[in-house]
Image (cartoon, rainbow, N blue to C red; front, side, top):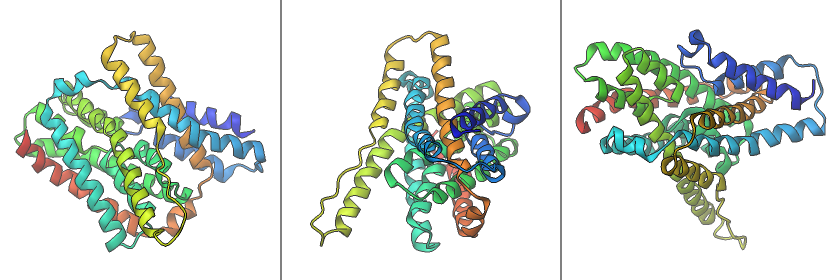
Length: 330
């Protein structure tokens, strides 16, 4: 079957699987499922892709990705920030700043990883997992295998973190609301925040989801700042060249901010919000399926243990550092 038929099918199957309670209990959202299904298809398919197939895959990884992130903004509102408290915003800011800074520095300087692998892994751990990695890709323009490696580590340790929260809850004297802030500020994926919060109680889950969505909202200024920093660094590297560096402005980020603002200012009918949510999931899942279809398992294996070591360090910082930060600021 041609790619323009296969990729939508994979995206729909991933969304359907993610809606099954037994699957969602593991914190697996449609995005990691789509990349796994895409990788399986890429390995076992005997079809030789033509130019139209390549063009459609590129369209999914570029245009569909940006559309999905823009539509995701309809699930966020500034009222949610006010409801959960400004302490949660402060915790999210510290978590994103520290995790991304440490992850990038240690990944490049200590583990000697490729710059793009370190940045993508750090961004995925700091903000919102696979979606953050794909959004960061628009600025970095990395190789496909670098994206896959980062996503693999984030999915692995995000799932491990999700199963850790219920055990931690039994060992600490933290109220349900505060523990929800802890989950939301340290969980990798939105689905993992939902699953971890549900394993405790409704209040914890609701707080965790809102705090996690605040982190997702911070993806917009993060991408803009990253673009400016990378442009300045590239300009320094090309100081001896006459070529001028152009700031890679991720315009879709402004669309994301606009949809969040619209959702904050106007009452959108529930059926419309559900439709936008599905369209966002479908678009992002299509992008992940296209990415997975052109990825080989050998690529991840060739990366060696260093990306896993970096992800392990960030996992430890999120679980332990996030706990003490939440206890101190809440």
